[in-house]
Length: 567
Image (cartoon, rainbow, N blue to C red; front, side, top):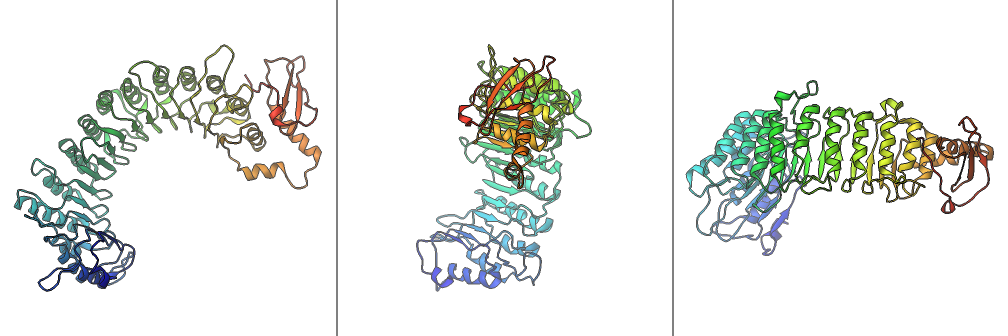
C-alpha cells in the first residue's frame, strides 16, 4: 500500500484508522508521503486519518514499549512545503503521552509564506497527554502566534479527553485572546479535568469571537460563518447560576443561535430549588429569549429551578421563537404548571410562543396542575408532543379529575372545543390503575367518541394498569398507534391464546374487560361490537352494573357507537 501511494496523483483523503499499524506502519506510510532532495513522492493526499493505530507502540489498554520513531517520521512529512501535501492529520486514540506531544508539537508552525502550506488541522483526542502534554501543545501554538503577524497555520485542534487542567485553560485563554481574529476555527477541549470556573472562562470567549467553533466540557458552539445556525450546548456543563448569565450573554450576541442546551448545569441544587433573590441568571435568559428570533430548541432539564425559576422563565417565552422546550426535573409543581396555561392558550395570538413539543416530566405536577394545562389545551392548535411522565397527575390513583379534564380536552365532546394536534402523549410513571384506563379509552384513536385525528403514540408504562386491562386497551386501539404498555405484544398474545384455555374461560375474560368500560351517566343500555364479540350491558336501577350478556360474534369494522368512560 505504501509503495502504491507513492505514485497516485488523485487520492486526496486516506483513512487507515483502527489498523494497529504501530511505529513501523507509521514509518511506511510516511515514507510514501516524503519529499526530499532526491525524491518527490505523493503530493495529492491532503487528509490523513491514523487514529486508533498504536503509533507509539502502546495498545489501548496500556501494554507495550513506548516508541516515537514512527511519530517522528510522520512529523517530517507534515512540514510546510510547496505544491501540496498533508494539511490535516488525525492521530487520536494512540496513547502518545507527554513524550509524543513533544514530537507532534514540532509539526505546528506559523503560517508559511508564498505557496507553502502547513498543518491546518490536528486531532489529538484521547492520547493520555495529561496536563504536561496538553501544555506543550498549547505553548507551541502560543509561540507560533507571537512569532508571526499571520498567526499559526493550525486552525483546527482537538484536545478532548487528555487531562487538560485549570492551568491549561488559563494558557488556552491567553492564546485565544491574542489578536482580534480568532486563533482557531475549531477547538475541542471537552471531557478534560478542568473545573466549572475554567469552563466559564472559555464560555466568555464565545462572546468575544462568536464566529468560531468551540467545544469544551459539556459545551459546543458552532457558527463558522455568521449566517450559519448556531448551536450552544452546555449539557452537563455544571456552570451554575453564574454560568447561566454568561450563556444568556452568548445567546444575545449570537443572533443565529437555534439551539440552547443547558441541561444538568446545576443552576440550582436538587435539595435547594431557587429562591426569588437567586434568579438573576434566569431573568437574564428570559430577556435573551425575547430578543432571540432564531432560537427554536431550549433544554433546561435537571436544573431544579423550582416554581419561582420556572415562572420567571415562562415570562420570557411570550413572543419567543422557541418551539421545543424541555423542563424535566425542575421541581416546578402545580405552580409551575399554572404558568404554562397562558403559553398554551395563547398560541393563536400574534407574537405568541407556538410550542410544538413540551416536556414537563418529573416535576411533581398534581391533579390541579394537570387541570390547569388541560383547559387551555382545548384551544391550542400547535402542540404536537406533550410529556407528563413521572408526575402525580392522579394523586396516586385516587383522583382522576385531572385525567378526566385531559381526556375531555383531547376528545370530541358535544358542543365543546377539543385539541386535534397532539400526536404524542407520555403519561408513564403516573399511578393510574384500572380507573385511569377507563378514561384513557377515550384518548384512543378510532374508538367511538375518542380522538378523531388520534394519537400516534401513547405511553402508559409504569402506571399500574394490570395485564387484563392492558389487553383490553390494546384491543380497542388502532393497529398503527404506538401504544406503550408494561406488557409486550407477545405477552398479551399469549394471554389471549393461552394453551389449554377453554371457551368458557375466554368468554369470562372478555366479559371482564367489557364490563370495565361503562358509563354511569348514560342510559341503561349500550351496545358495543368488537372483533371478538358483541355484548350489551344493563345497569340496575341503583346504577350498579349487571352481568354482561354475550349476544354473538361480529366484525370490528361494523361496530356501533359506544361511550366508554368513567366520568
